[in-house]
Image 1 (tube, one colour):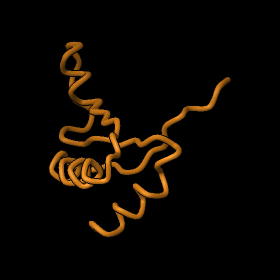
Image 2 (cartoon, one colour):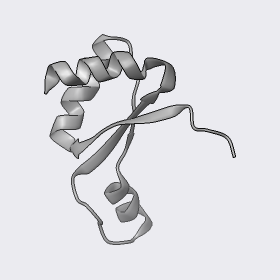
Image 3 (cartoon, rainbow, N blue to C red):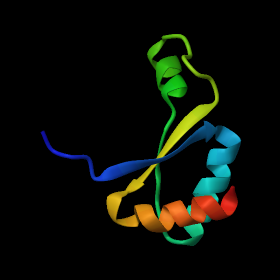
Length: 73
């Protein structure tokens, strides 16, 4: 089994995730945002955790992204 090239950085509301994405973009970091409730809605299932998203960043950028996140919080 291969390891993922992305690491989990943050889980929270869409508002917090938007602020994090903006700060990461300023540092040229492109995160992957997973919104399982939106995926479930599109598939016709009920929402599991509405307005909660997970942010992942590339393994090579994780330390820099973690520092940016700690400055935001």
